[in-house]
Length: 228
Image 1 (tube, rainbow, N blue to C red):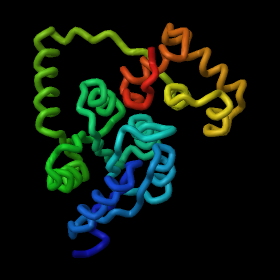
Image 2: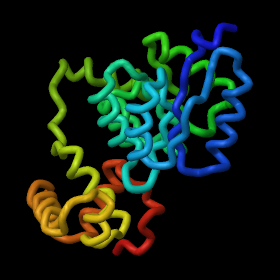
Image 3: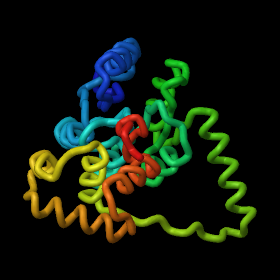
């Protein structure tokens, strides 16, 4: 096969064993080429700009910047790239957030391996691809929405990209100084973002922000085990 016709793929997955397994699987396909690997959302954003892949296979639960926020930033900068979420989570909150960010597909990691290659080919063509259980739920919600005569759902509070980044780091237990160093901003700016988040979300402590981040699918519930 002509190498120029291969579907170029960027893998964004922080677990090395999973990432290596995915790479080995995809390298066995003659029409797919893995051109880069990212272990954080920040790396995925940077490598997308550098490598210009056709498809990004994106995990959600990654440190510093999760896959959902990375997807939002990547698609804002590169509308033509196709993002395929591959996650251990199939909760409605994760799926809805992923599709809202513009993901073209969503597979759960329990899905048979051959579906990944099929999904990559489909989203590269401009189609969508979801695990069967997720597709059924999406179809059911669409029918329910039509049954309610198109009444709009109450809008969720919209956070900026920077606010999501700060919120994730707060929920991961990072202190203001560590957040400032990670995001290359001042501690004072971090404090302003924290205060703004609390006002915007009407939440007044760190534990509350962490619970919100878990409920919104920004971090996994297993990240913080000491929430009370």
